[in-house]
Image 1: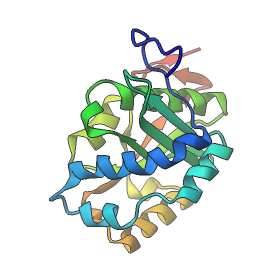
Image 2: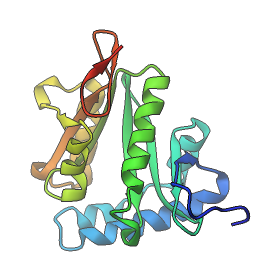
Image 3: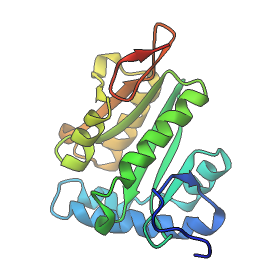
Length: 192
């Protein structure tokens, strides 16, 4: 990549049309980490379709991150669910795991949610794999009890159940972005 500086810290950017084909590859490769998991077959049978990526790109809710060589190594696709920013899918190439790319994407999405006026960010994930539930918890997300779900989250979880996800392992999570009119900092304290 011309002008690429490998010493710089990777920052998420909006996806471009030429990135879209790579995102399916990244998703499939990331899914390899679930081999043998009860959700593996569901993920393998229902990859994110190109229309969803294109919609996210048009809405400016699809971000990518580049690795040391300047190639796209991960992405985060978001949407809105009720009044919340909804993280629909986030994947990083397995060989790029542990380098902070997923965390950078997630923190970028949190910042974008605040800029867009959302008070919360929500998602669904597997509770039993360390790069999912525990990762999100380390960024201030908490399990969202079923009785507190929004109408939209009830629909999302019903769709996931219909797709065949092992719902005993599936959780909804949320992160509050505002408390008493103040933005909540990275690790949970309110800032004016």
